Image 1: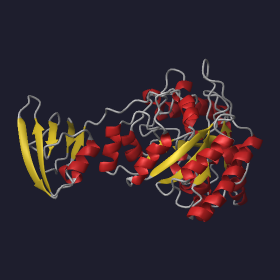
Image 2: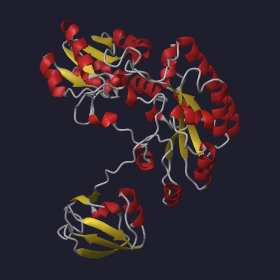
Image 3: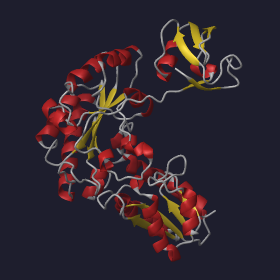
Image 4: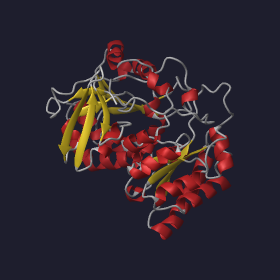
Length: 426
């Protein structure tokens, strides 16, 4: 493992430099940063380094932690997904997007460190042994169907190992697993969904939760499998079935275990369940309970907005999926206290109007819409999830370019809407 950087406060600083390699820890080779942290957990640690020309250096430590050593490792070798899922979002993209959007990772290490969902399709027996030995828990696993024939068809991978024995093996060795199903109309819903929920529920508590998420389709589907999205009535039926399962599972395990994604409630135009219904929010980042949390946070803090005296006109941009619940749950209060805020649902012309979440709005669509209504606002608030940490939109437009063209004050919002509005009116 090559060293990228070393903290000046590290006891190795001055002895080991960027470009050096870690050859072994206590005689064992190091695979990656996770492996390094695991191996230096011994009471006594012997680390062997090598400089760029191969000269070896040895250091001994007692009761040391990775943070104390301050080493940043080159850990870029990510496992690539070899599946060809019928609903894969990467296959539904045009050219010219962020490079990272075209990479299909299937790496159990990212599942452990970042909560990425994996199918375990390229996880070897050695990988499973390592997961168990190093207690890489929890993991996040895309199941889609527990019927292995159907699962192989959906992932277009005839070599997939049966999923239930894999999950049972991990669970019996102390690994906690969170699962998801991407639901496709007429394919893995109905009886197949019933079977999947039942068989995964039987693995509780090692399988701790299950998210049921609707398939997302863009307009870029030439030569791809014929799929469609759920309509309002069908989404309501999915919600009803999932909530029925929750009641049954709660009696058995004292947890609801399975949740329908927020997007199903949006499609069905239904109110979100109470905050308590989502328990500990085990799949928050997967869009389960995110909208309810947003509403709850706003209601708890909204009284602070009464102090605003400014009459600056603020335009709040969002995706169409948020329009309904924000119109019902947020805007009435803002209107009641006389805050000059208008809500605008931006159509997704780039991906297609079937894509409604704000996180998939491109800079060009947001800019086109903002320019169209520019005479109606003094400041515009953008959704917080439409830019990455480098202030780059999905289509590589930068925030500075957006501001330069719009020529209007622009604020990137926070998930805390009250804080965003306080900043906008300050």
